[in-house]
Image (tube, rainbow, N blue to C red; front, side, top):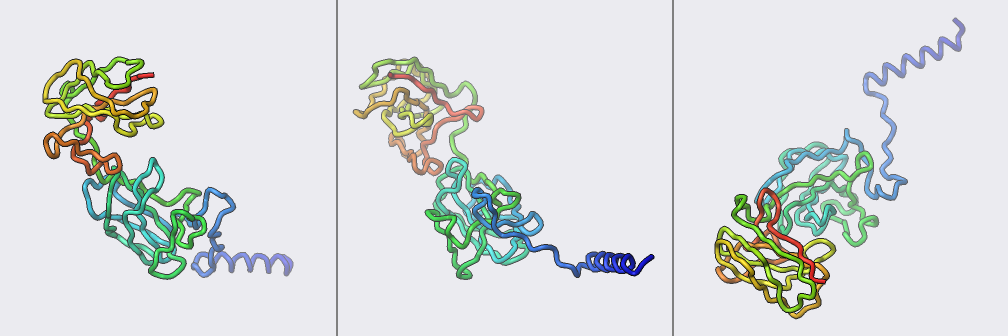
Length: 278
């Protein structure tokens, strides 16, 4: 065996021994990505993790079971805005490494679900430097693992009033040309309730344009006066419980989960129906 081969074998053996002993550092991870969709800091599953129970009903503090952070970081909680982070409703700082059972105080929860994410603390230590209006320019951006933001969705509020099958129902027929009122063919409610008419907001209930109170039981041909507003081609009609102050409709479209007069649900489906008026 010549001297060159001996040297190569010796170098290879030395590298293997150093690697096994943990003395050889792994290549530095690239913190940013060329992919515009990955606008935060890049981390690996070995350095950044987030474990949280996905249902925590009615809590005022969200509990994150385990968080692993590559450096000092923030646990940030946002309301769920149609699958995307909305207004921030919780913030807690964690230090580099592993933390368990971290409590994040929640404020102004107005949605059924929240999104919790792990952000770096890169600018002024101890100050959350992140602007929702300029996220890619903010220093305290979220971590991304495998090209996805490290975030989890948690259900914290329950929306709707559950009732048994056959206890609540609504039936309508299309009413082309309806302007001043709408007739509900059948409305069934388990207790005092409201028949609520909404505009069509891109396939979802929008602004309210009609309201009529009904008592418990089965009702036929319920006339609902419509507000003098421009109507969409299609309207949505739902049955809401009257659970707050009797005779006062207490339902805020901007704070649905905290409103007492929520719609009835049967088998997980809202008791509601579309009706075409154009």
